[in-house]
Length: 382
Image 1 (cartoon, rainbow, N blue to C red):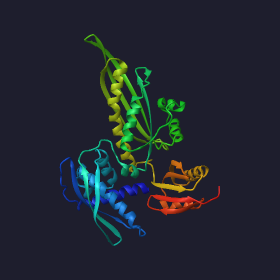
Image 2 (cartoon, helix red, strand yellow; image 1 turned 30 degrees about the horizontal axis):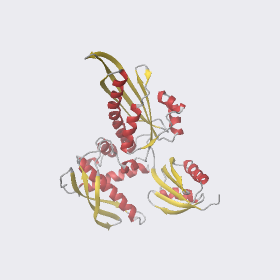
Image 3 (tube, helix red, strand yellow; image 1 turned 180 degrees about the vertical axis):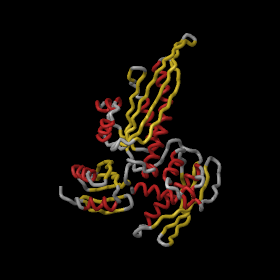
Image 4 (cartoon, rainbow, N blue to C red; image 1 turned 60 degrees about the vertical axis):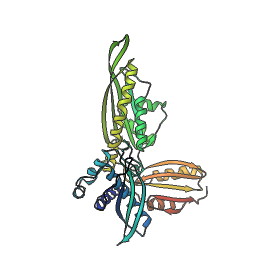
């Protein structure tokens, strides 16, 4: 719920600052300078947090300015499907780059922090890149990709489709779960259509979203051209994304390509290479749209980054289990442990204050609490 409110807040501020945006000045090289104004409410005196929210909203609006203004955005703000309307616009188009962000003026009125900012925005879209701001808004979902690839009635050993799909998701900014490719349960999962089995596999390897697919090449028409056998191949890639904890379908897509090769395998590989990125890019946006729109079964909550120093490896694991079993926690990502410091991302419907309180009750002295950060050190005896 907090995640959805965060997205709503960003979109509402985008709408409110639309009227304050100046016309962009287009320099050479596909960049233009945009002046934006945004604001955020200051809660409990947390001015830095308000500034962070206002800055995020301003960056989002500058991005929209580069992609193209939302027609009738002011009136659509009042519609009940605000999030789906705006998310569709954002995620159906490629994302630009916002750089050289500079706050030119800042002031406070009636408990609200306002900022004016200037930034340079690229007009050249980067296809399939969501960026860290959007990924964080979506709850930092971890993606696992399993694709059954076949050429005729034989399994393919190239894994071209899975590899090409993986590249697209990595480029978009999603965190990727990479289970051992030789594991017997992974090999079985690639071929399985049993959702309960697939959900167990995703849970075992810590994935929030499972992208399952089938890649199939057929129709090996053969003809001789200048004495060389040429095979005509029809390749089809179908991908489906589901939430691992519920099996809820976040979106599907299918792409077909016709290619030719000096062998059936050569033609199939060319077809898979062409079809996979197109299908994957569509799924990237469909996942983002579904999560941002708060559709049924979407990943709840927000991300709180937890960093605890002075902790043994055993206690680090205990903290991981403690957070995973806490009420309202969707998932915990164990980011790493080194130099007696453990770092985790906690996805839940709890604010940072409640995460901090839970840790404080279980052997951690909390040093810092921010909007999405909890830092502390271990004080309990091993």
